[in-house]
Image (cartoon, rainbow, N blue to C red):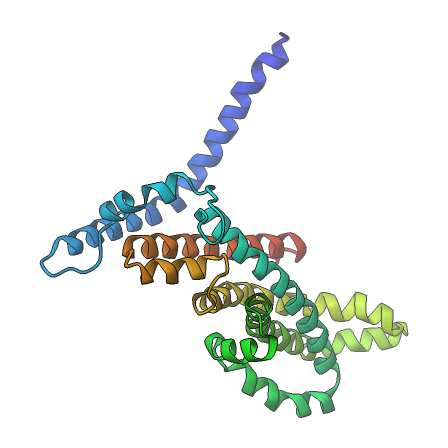
Length: 278
């Protein structure tokens, strides 16, 4: 082994330790807050008349689900990994469609004042309808649980993308448009060099809001749709069987997945958008 090779592990270890030490100030407060929350939760569960199990009881009741998330006994009897994966697949399909349609319509509305005035009242009306209200309409129209669930996610996620994109297009500085006229840019050049870069921060704001709404919508849709694999139906089935600990565990998993989805979208945004000057 050469001298250079022998030094690499130490350098890597030192670099990892340095990164960890830099992150500790950001990690310690949430760790302390979570520990306090768990302690208070456990104390309240010990009070007379408490109806919800504490964290210790939840772990004892659901240790099979925690340590064996990949089991598959057929039908809807699957581990939490497969339940969450099924929900994420539905979210991915509908969210992608919502992004494509929402960005396209947002650009169209943002660049056409007449269309904006005509469609804005309809959009403002539809965007206030909660996800659960769309479920019976989707089931009546599509007749099947799977496409109905996809539609509920789509119709919930599209509005923040559409509205933020339209606002971003309308907020393009006048100077940018004047430069485009001076340079005599054609529509394609204006679209890719002026419109998209200027509206991109607004588009990502809509995309980041929409990913959270899409995750909320699939849970709401799956809860009232029987016979499909998904974390929402898992919660409903656990509630029907009076397995409150399983419901609580699923809620924790939902929160963690939602947190990771938001962080992933933020990471993508930071990689694509130019860094703001400090």
